[in-house]
Image 1 (cartoon, rainbow, N blue to C red):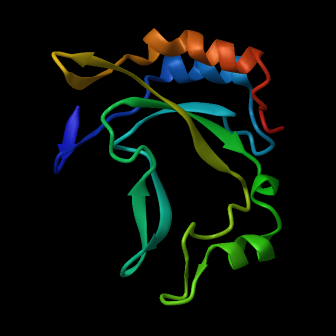
Image 2: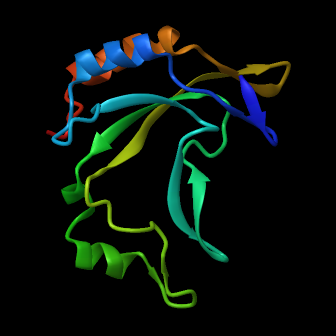
Amino acid sequence: MWMIGKSERLHCPKQFQDRLTKEGGLNRYGQPNFKVVWGQTETMRIAGRDGYRETLTGFGEACWILMRWVPAETYGPPDIFYFENYDKSSGLQFMGEYPWKGRYQTLFPMRTMEEVNGKNRKDRLSAGQHSHRFHSANHHGVSQGN
C-alpha cells in the first residue's frame, strides 16, 4: 500500500475482479458491468471552484466500493444533461462532460457501522467479506446495463 497525502491508493486484486466480471458480465464496450474500487483511488472529473478537477468517487472514504456501470442513456439526452448541470456563475458543468460511454456509479461501500460506547465506528471490510452482496444484487434485478 502507498499513500498520497492522507489517502491510501489501493487496487482490487485481479483474481477478485476477474471473478466479479465473470459473474456480472461485460458492458457494450467490453468493460466490466461491476468493479470494486478503493474509495481513495477512483476519481471522476467534475466542476470545482477553479475549473474542472478530479474528485474521489468514494468521497475519500477508506473502504472498498462496489460500482456498477450505467449506460449514457441513463443520464438522458446530452442537451438536457448539459442544461440541467450548467452553472451560470462559472460556465462549467457540475457533473463534467456528458458520459458518452456511460459511467460507473457507486452501488454501495463495503464497510460496517456500529455504535461502540456511544460513538459511531466504521470498519472497512475486505472485498471477499462482501462478495455475497454482489451475488444478491446481481440475482435480484440489478441491471447489467447491456
